Each structure stands twice: as structure tokens, then as C-alpha cells.
Image (cartoon, rainbow, N blue to C red; front, side, top):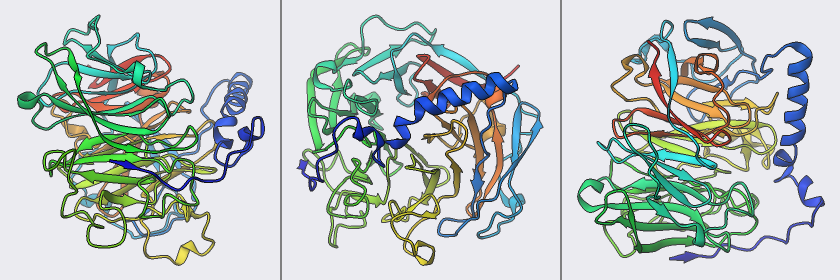
Length: 456
């Protein structure tokens, strides 16, 4: 299926392109980095990054209250400011354990990758599959050695040179991969359009069959940014796909007639090339049936917490705010608000504060210091570190920090910063899960993949 969205007006030429609203944050990354380095050298370090503002339940508003920090054990506890507003919940009601005395470390799984953007494993598999943006999926053996031949090489089909947000962006193994060998990739093709394709493993379990490739969804795109890139299977067996707004915020995110700026849900087992699940929210109304949620700018990484019954989205911001959103899996049809608002701040809609039809973020943080792009993560449900059960991990790609919190259904609780404990990891472009459900971290600049472990 090919979906062709309306074409926006042509973009300005270089160098004016660098200073458009959509490109301004990325054009300033180098300047911000230089300024941050200068501040570090001048004042002896310190990240200078503001702690996040936490809000109440989705649908509530928030103030711009600052947050203080207290060091406890292996983490830094982020204490919310007293002016935070929204629905007030009882933090003691959360079932997630406290982590004040827990020390963590980031153990190297493997390194030497070229711009890795994701890592994952089929359930129960002791290998780790690492996605490189150029179009290669590598296999890491249990002992940490990287196989010489890639699992999959799609470099001839992919444009990764035209922009940092292009390339092979996501990988998802079918829930029955051990039996059927099916998996799915999300990439941008030579025309920079978004492609979801299905492949199958060959007779060699460490090599995919390139001839098995089948495009199941293609979305025409313009420009070189905001492609999203995540895809994952939910507990319902359906494939969830994240698409950014394609830099056309005025048209795509609030439209149900385009797939951009949305999270899609499709049934890859019920049709050819797929079927629309009958429970999708817009199957009987105006709009595209594949859309499960909308109003997103660039949901680079999202995840599904099956145990908690929720979907969490790290939506990369525009001018001022990065945000974490969440919605119950039972509540398809959610509108996350972009571009009516950025974070909980009105953006295109000056009267957004009175709207009741949008889901506001549960956590947001400003573009201060070198913070510029949120990396959404996972709620930890592994067995190796039971103290972390229920804690959601996330990062900032530019600032390099790693943080966590617990969402108790109404409020963000137990916010912590693990950066000092984990050490300098680099730019965390993604989190992932290994075959045992343990948390992986992927650093795109250093080329390393880590596993979160309890420090001995």
C-alpha cells in the first residue's frame, strides 16, 4: 500500500533552509555543543541541564516549575518542584520498588558499530541484533563477538546519506519468530520515502533471506526529517509503527487522512500485505483505518509495557520542549496535541489550555543546556534487577544523560538520574530489549551497545 500525502510548499534554499522553524534546532546543535563545552571548561564541568517538569495524569496541565536534585546511592534523585500542578496522586500507591540504594552499571555488549540506532532480540534468543543506520543488521553472539557477515544488508535500497534522520530506523521480530522466522524493518528508501518491509530468516539462523523481502507499507515523504522509525509488536499481536510528521506540521499530525505524525496499528497475519484490525479507532469514521493515535511530531522511539497495559512515547520537540507521553492500550484514538501544543505549551493553538481532546505529556523538559532530542525507552520488566520493576528509562540524545521514573497511573514518581552511575555512554540514540527482557542502550556516536546491570 502506498499512501501519498499532500505536498507542502517547496522548502527554502540553502542557507536559508538552515534557519527555518523545522530545521532551527538541528542547525543550532553545533553552536549549542560549542557553548556547552566552553561552559564546561570555564566552570569545571556540570551539565547545566534543567531537570524535567513532571505533570499529572494525561489531559492535565503543568507549570514550568523547576526541580532540585539529591544524590542517593548510584543515582541522582530528581525532586519535583513545589509548583507542579495537575491531578495529585498518592506517590506511595505505586507498586514499583524504591531504588535509593541501587547501583547500576552499563556493561558493554559489543562495540565498533557504525552509527547504531537500535538493538533487539527475539524472545528467548541469547543473541543481540544491532541496527546500523546505513542499512545493516549485525549479529552479536552471546560471548560478545560480532559475526563477520551481517544478518541483513539493505544498503543498496536505503538512502542514509541525505540526512541523519534517514536510513534503517527500526526492527521488530514477529512474536512467533522462533517458529516462522518473520521480522520487519522500517527504513527510508532511495527516494527518502518511508518503507515497512517484511523479511524471513534463511536456513542459516544468522542470515536473513534477502529474496524474501516484501514491502507491506510505503509512505511518500518530502524533506529529509521527521520519519519516526520505531515499530514493535503489542500483546495483541498487532504491529505498531511510528511515523513523524514529515516536517509538515501544518497538515499531517492533526489530519486523519495522512499517516504521518501518527502511530499505526496493523495486522500482518490477517491480510496481504496486512489487514486493519477491527478495533482500530477510525475504521468506522472518517480517516485512515491504520491510525491508532495521532498528533505527534517525531515519535523516534516508543514502547509498549504489556504488564502495565500502556504505550509510552518519546516525542522529539520543535523549539522549546521535549516530552514523554503515555496512553492506555485500551484507549486507541488518542490525540497527543502536536502542533496545537509543544509539550504542554500552546503552539499553533493559542487557546490550547482549554482543550479537552488532547493528551498532555506526563513529563517534559526544556531545550536548556545541551538538551535537544528525547530518546524514549522502556518500562523495565526484566528479572535481573527486580528493584527496577516498573521504572521507565529514557535519555536525551544531545545531552547524553539517562534518567528514569515511575508512572503510577496518575503522576510521575521516583524520578532519578543515572548518568553519573553509568558513566559517559555518549549519545544514547535508542534503548532496546534483549531476549530475556533486559534493557539495552545504544550509543550512536561511540558505536557501542550496553546492557543495564546491577553493579556488584
